[in-house]
Amino acid sequence: MTTADRSFVIAVFKDNNQAQQAIQDLLNAGFNRDQIRYSVRRGGGGIADDLTNMGIPQQEANFYNREFEQGNTVVTVHTNTEQQQAFNLLRKDGGYDFNTNQGQATNYAAPATGVSPTAGTPIPNVPGNVAANAPATGAPGGLSGEREIQLRAETLQPETRWVRAGEVDIVKQVVSEQKTIDVPVTHEEVVIEHHPVSGQPQASNTPISANENETIRIPVNEERVNVEKETVTTDDITVGTRKVQETERFTDTVRHEELKVNREGDVDVENVNPQQQNPQNPGRTAS
View 1 (cartoon, rainbow, N blue to C red):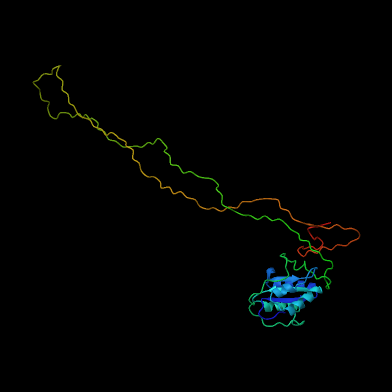
View 2: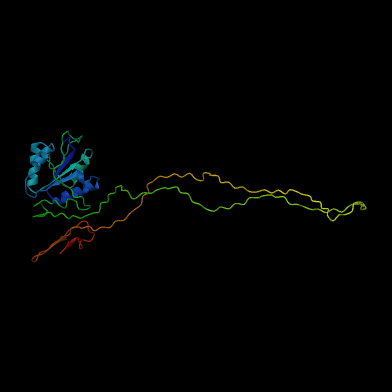
């Protein structure tokens, strides 16, 4: 479905349902939506210029442009390494290319220098809604008179930035308090001991005089406490900041767009939404 030395594979589908199935198979195989483009005619010009800008020869570009103008769907897959896998998936679902309607591809190699990005429309980034916006007008199984409406919704996008929440002053101040300590001290006491005279008392020739007194003076000592204050270091303080992560919850009002179907006359409306589990409840569609 393409020639060698290309970083893309191109296929044409006459049945738009087959094109959608091929896109789904590509996504299931691991290709992402940014790699897949599809082109379906909705009026306006063709796709020949876009294809030649990608490096496709003019004759081949004219072939795809004619298929496109006949209402067929053109699917392009961009890949540098999985061209053969993409080719097999497109061919399996009924795709064909310029070389042969049987889909015979040549060997794939690295992309040629100067090949520009893809032409066509990117696949919508909605799970389960593969190429739902690109049926081929007039093709079997497609929709005629197709128009597009995009539904949008607001989402909450958080963004954090550093701001000053406040300041903390660390101040050392003097606090006075009463403190009591117990100190053991020693003092002297006078002890008077009486001892009886041993043996026979001896007579004294000196009479006792009423005016005669004898005094013994004994010094008495004691310890006294002298308290002095001494300054010592009790704590070493380190001050700094650290980051602490927490979760804050924010609530705001967001808006989204819904479909409202207004019927005039006896008209049947089928709302197909692949995202809904119950086809009878299409969601976001009111009438």
